[in-house]
Amino acid sequence: MAEALARVAPLQRALLRDPIAFLSAEHARQTVLLGHLERVARAPLARAAPVLAAMLLDWMTSELPTHIADEERSLYPLLTAHDTAGVLARLQAQHRGDKAAIPAVVAGLRRAAAGEPPTPDFAAAALAFAAGHRRHLALEEAAVTPLARRVLTEEALAALADEMARRRS
Image (tube, rainbow, N blue to C red; front, side, top):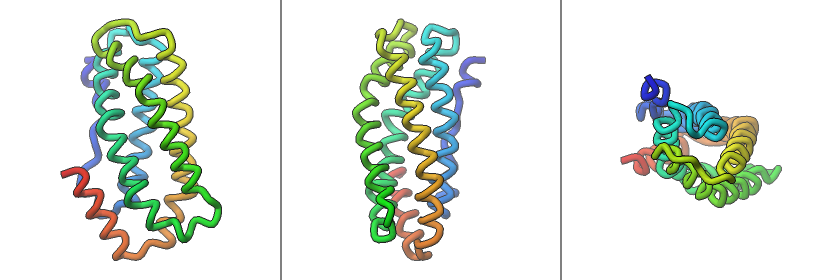
């Protein structure tokens, strides 16, 4: 039963045909994963915690870095000339903050995945990461997604989709 609860399936690759929709759907998926992270942070020894923690480890160490690369290496450069409000710089600073926070969260998740109590700072680190990442996702959805829809050409979207697909192959 716990394994069924822990499954948050990756997005289908076919959605990459619309890379902005893919990123937006991934943001929604990440919101679900953040909810699981909060559950593990609050109850790291709960029955489902090891399975949830293992799933979250994969997300934080594999999928999230790919997602950040999609944004920083592929999407943001296409939008820089149109970012008059400086939102992209704020988002990149938040990515740096995420990267700095991830090791403490991952260490706690590794212990929880093994059925061991995490270090005392795990709950605070995980909850702070979740709260900060939720704000980050909200800003991307409010500012970046509409900007990308407005300014990116079909050619730019196709190139973006190709780059994102290569990261996943």
